[in-house]
Length: 70
Image (tube, rainbow, N blue to C red; front, side, top):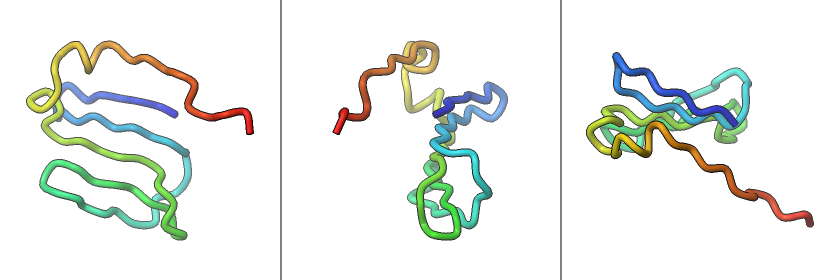
């Protein structure tokens, strides 16, 4: 997973997998989901992130155990 922030565009992008984007699904004016050709989510883009998130959330990332050992 990769999280990037473009200060000029005020856009936050969370990439789950590096693959070719097949289509974009716009949820609202500020949120777009990138999917592959099979509909699996590759990433999510949040526009105007600096206005919608606190400054601390853009500079501090905590990673917790996301997957169980099943």
